[in-house]
Amino acid sequence: MAGELPFEKPLGDLRRKIEELKGLSQGKGIDFSDEIARLEARCLQLEEELYSELGAAEKMHLARHHQRPTSLDFIGAIFTDFLELHGDRLFADDLAIVGGLAKLNGVPVTVIGHQRGKDTKDNIARFFGSPHPEGFRKALRLMHQAHKFRRPIITFIDTKGAYPGNTAEERGQSEAIARNLREMALLGVPVLCVVIGEGGSGGALALGVGNRVLMLENAIYSVISPNGAASILWKDASKADQAAEAMKITAKDLLGFGIIEEIIPEPQGGAHRDYAGQADYIKEALWRHLQELGSMTSEELIEDRYMKFRKIGRFTFAPDAGGSQDSERQSAEEATYGEEALPADVNTSASSKDLITETVTETVTEATPSPAAESARVH
Image 1 (cartoon, rainbow, N blue to C red):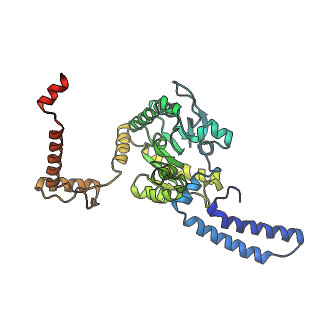
Image 2: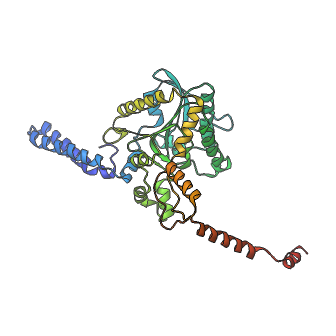
Image 3: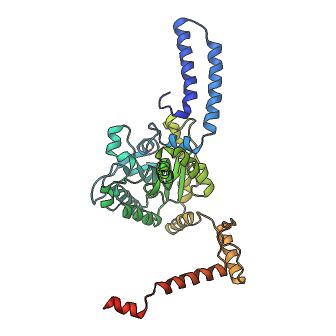
């Protein structure tokens, strides 16, 4: 089976056995029809079992599959009249991000996405889908243009992270990402984001501030790549599978956290098994959400986007021995952020606050030099 992943080996072995028997049957004239039927039934059963119980590590490998559809693949299959636009008008054209004008069911839109390479040469040219600052600035230029001409924005997220080299840092990588976050929050048009592969770190967030964030079933989305997390936690990047299981990076996890709004199903075995079928699933979801957001005013869209991110994360204050004012504050916070309790070792009572104040006061007092010492330092 082409592009077979390690966890798919049992299924691949079974399929190769079926093909071998079919070849023998045709070449030797031996009837293996019963055996082939039995193995095909077993193959279907194993396929169902394998892909219905994928863990985070397996989904990470599917999200990184070298045959997985890229942004340009989906743009070509979902939109019509695509016109790619280049450059950030400041430095250069970063091939790790593609974008331009297109039509979705006849509606003009701006579409932007990370773009991985299809082979080694292409990957080198596109920095393996890791943008430089000029890539993020190109994306922002297209977003501002969409805002000006009232076109909805659709982004495809598929990157391990922003390019980490010296050249990117020298040209203001962190500033470019931060500016995108701020400016995307203030766009007065619908913004739809789709994580189609791997959404890693700030490189993903720079295209991810949308009214709706959708994820493909086997995509992953995380604050750091599992390899990077393993390098930090265990000083061993080869433990990426273990990190992936612990980081809660799958679409199912993120839907439960309220970080995304919808999981887009994938063909069995992953998006690379059926490009056209996967594109149809994405197109249907995009059109549905676009119609929902299309009735909102600019102010409502900005408020909707703000509230989407504002509600992520829940906390409450621990029981307070203070007066009714503290109780009222706690009730208000619980109503806003949920009823999950803080860890037992977190205490915000008045006595603990007094202790903190006393400790800080003592530290400041000890650190303040005497008049004699200050005079000696000056002279």
